[in-house]
Length: 468
View (cartoon, helix red, strand yellow):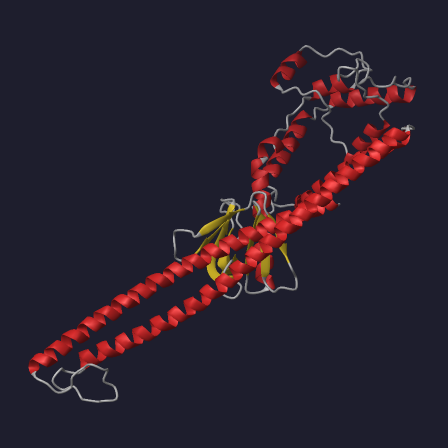
């Protein structure tokens, strides 16, 4: 597919990985000059967990890369073609040609992040073991007192035995059984479980219908061996976890229920990733609320303790302690306010100094530009016009240059002119060096201003915490 002639994606294939590439604008926030938009060639592949960008389409060395592991993607519908990638406390702002190209990039980025997560957890997903039918009947039918034939021991030795049921239960049934379990979980003084904490309640007496159904089930199991179909089903499920799209893209025939199941799984996975991004975004808010709750709990405990005290001296001591802490906070707040005022004055002085430097820099630039124009004009006149054919114009002649004279005098004037040109070139080089120095000075001052602003913001946060 292609959008605006710059977005290209390879066709999905079971053997070849899907790739997506195209031009996008990368928006950077710079301290001087504001945000900048630069056009790069971005490339994304299923084989690597990074989003690379290049200066041109034909370059082999990338300019940078964005890791997709643990990343979050956001966008504002009101902004055309713009979206953001949040990863490792960094914010990357990208802009496409239109909203359709943005949706394509976001969909491919989410798919790559999901495949990366599945690739990292494929070992834990594919650990599905198979239990034989004989061990299943031994584990799940304790009411049966029948013995297992001798030849079943060889079959059990060839299979992998796992303590647990082999039939699949619905999630709602498992939750219902867990909620209806009457076992109690409690700890002793050493923090260990008591011996009877995990015991199940006594089972109800078996009825004749249950015994009859159990016997019929065992007879059906002996008549037909379903171990091999179960193993095939589990192997198919294991392969489906490694390849989430089952056999839809490989040309195999699939039923309508399989397609619906795949769509449901994809929707659930996308919803899980969205919830994961939301949880990571709200983590800071939960930490702040937790700290506020801890402070409120401490205050409530102090007030309850004070209410329990009946002596007037303890009430007076509590009030004095409260007043002392309040006075300390007020003194600290006033000190922080003075520091903030001092920092603001220093910031204002630095801003004035920065403005003066900018004015001086503009003046130096104008001076350098005028000197270069004079140099170019003088060098051009000297190159184009011969010495003997110089036209005399008394209005343009500088002071101290002789017009009429001998050859020796003209030679000395020419040497003085060359010396003046060299001197002007040296002065221009000096102005250029001074210009570079002032540029570096402006950058250093900008860093100082940013550090002061960060410090002022930190002081304001601490002041807010102390006041609250």
